[in-house]
Structure formats: C-alpha cells, structure tokens
Amino acid sequence: MHRLSSRRGVVASLASLAAVPLVIGVLGWLADWPLGMDSAVYRAGALTLLHGDPLYDADTLAFEPEWAQLPFTYPPAAALLFVPLAVFPAPVAWGALGAISIAAAGLVVALSLGGTGWRAGTSSAKQSPSLGLLARGTPLVVVGLTAAVLLLEPVWRTVSLGQVNLILLALILVDVMVLTARGSRAGGVLIGVAAAVKLTPLIFVPHLLFTGRWRDALRALATFVTLQAAMLALIPQDVARYWTRAVSDPTRIGTIHWSDNQALNGLVLRLTDGAPWSMAVALGVGVLLAPPAVWLMLRYHRKGDELHALLVTAGYGLLVSPVSWTHHWVWVIPLLVMLLARLPRDVTAAPKRLATLAAVVVVFGSYVLLILPGGRDPDGWSVLDHVLGNAYLYVPLVLGGLAFAKEWRTPQPRRPPTGVRAVTG
Image (cartoon, rainbow, N blue to C red; front, side):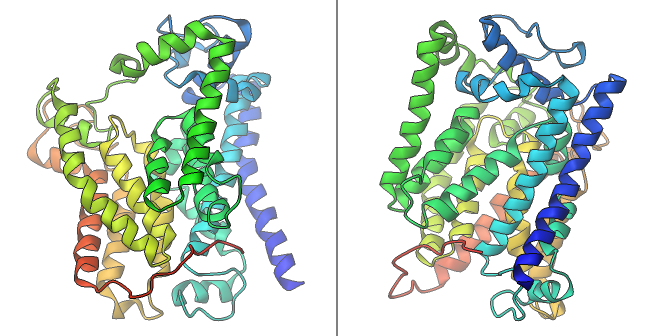
C-alpha cells in the first residue's frame, strides 16, 4: 500500500510540474506571447498537410506566426503525427508539448534509475547506495531529479523551443529497456515511430541488430517504412520532394557551423571556416570510431548493462550525425542518472567518479555554448572560444575512450547473461 501511494505521489508531483508550461501556454495565448518556435513549425506543418498545401516548396509555411518563419525540415510522416497540435493555438500547442516533454523526462529518469538497478521505495541500496539514501529521505526522488535536469541546457532548450527530443528519448528507452527486453512483439515499433519524426533514431536499428534482436530491428524498419508508404499514398509529391531534395538540403536546417551544432561535422565546419568537405571528414572519423563503439556497446550489453550500451550508441549517433543541435543532447539525463547511481555512500572515497559527474554537470549546466565571449558564430573566435565552443563533443569522446580502455583491460565474463535486464518497477 505504501509503495502504491508513493507511486501516486510521484505521478501527482510530475503532473504538477508538467502543468507549468501548459498554464504558461494558455496565458501566452491570451496575451499573444511568442512561445515555441519549433512547436509552431510542427503545428504549421500539420495545418499545411490538412489544407493540402505543399510542405517543402516554400521557405516558410503560411500557417506559422511571423516570429517562427522557418522551413519544415522533418519527414512527411512527422506532419501527420503532429496533427493533434493543429487543434490548439500556437502558444497552447507549445504548452501541451512542454507538458508532455516534462512527463517524458520523468519517465526517462525512472527508466534510467531502473536501468542502474535502483528501485523506488527500496530500503537498501546494494547496487546504488547513494540513490538508496535519497530513497529513504523522500519517495519523490524521480520528481526531484526531473526538476533538476530541467535546468540543463539541452533539456531547457527542448522545452523552451517546443522540441520533441525528450519524447523521442522516452520512446527509445521504453522500446529497448522494456518492450524488447521482455520479448514483446511490439519491440522496435516505437523506434520506428521516433525515426519517422526525426531520422536520427534510426541509429538504434543497428543497435538492435548488433545485439541479436533482429526481429525488433525489422519491426522498427517496417514501422518506419510503413509510415513513409502511407504518406506516399497521401501526398506523393511532397514525399518525392523530401527524399530527393529537402532531406539533403543543408540550407533548410539552419546555420550548422555555429556552436549550436555539436556534431563532428559542426566541429570541422568551425575549424575550417565552412569547408565543403567537412561532412566527408566527419564521416571518416565516424568510420574510425565505429569498431570501438560497437565493441564497447556489445560489451555492456553482454554484461546486462543495457542503459550503458544505449548511451554508447546514442553518443556515437550524436557525434556522426550531420547536425546535432544542443537540444538533441537530452541523452545527458540517463548519463547523469547512471553516474549518480554509481557514487558510493562516501563520495570522497571515489573522487574520480565524483569529478566525472561534476564535469558533466558543468558542461551541460553552465550554458557555455550560449554565453561564449565570441558568440555562437565562430567567425573571430579565439583559441579558447574554439575549445569551449565544442564542449558537448568532449563528453562522448572522453568518457567513451576511458570506458573502452577500462573494458579492454577487464576480462570478459565467462558466462555472459542470456537475457537483458528488464525495467519492471
């Protein structure tokens, strides 16, 4: 009974937290505030689809407010999935999306805690003592961590812009850590849906393949292809325009050489003053990083550490994607939860772990990319600006390198687990 009441308390507290953007959205509608630049684009794409107008012909969409004049850069199926936003005025749509995103962040925190072996309401903490202390202090640790991560720049930017990154992150975690882990026939479907909104979640299809879950990988691809085929039947010209022109047109995405783009491609663009061969170099580096990344990911998977395996794949995907805006880096949430869970009761006994946790918090919580002395545009940057202006990239490169070196020196378990640890509580 106590556990049930604790869960109800968590849900109620998360609901109160998620209601904040919804209330602000309603007030913004009444006061005509410009809220949610990206959610306004989502909504405009849905309205354009409903009115039968072309999605990708013009630079702007007729249904966007003046302060959100941006092109629709998402796959055609995304416009269909955004149709519910068309019901609301733009500020209210932002508020609704913000509420769902905060709820998704809470789900991500809960799943990440489960992935570390911690369970809400436990009186002991054999696997994660530091979180066990938090559990005894308050049953609402999930709410507390959710409120805390909202202050991180990727999370704050996602909510403030009206982005869907937190929702996509939650879909991927549910798919891999719950559905596929339990052998559900729905495994892979949520990844396919996420990829139909943004193409970047496709990186988790090879993740499923490499980890031996080929049926789930096929379901993910089938879901993605089915949604594209449905749009081909509805709006064939738009589908053709997207896959032949819009998907590879960098001018539709934004200023990808600014510090907002924390991908290897963005790094090379900044260092070479926009060289046209930047993507080729970034892909070359990605090819070199692929074997150690796959090896490390499989190493964690075979040890039953699915959360860590997912973080390796996500970090690699963020590096090699042509564009990884700062708000795409919401994977910092499960990373921080994992680092926090591995702290011992006496944190001074593990200074390296504490320093790692602190460094990640500083990188993603300092807003350094928004407050660079030279600004977000690298034109005129100093050497220090260049060092600070690629801060997010260092996290997967440094942590991944250290993890690889550690695992390389550690003998492989003789009897790897036959299954993957599922999240059940």
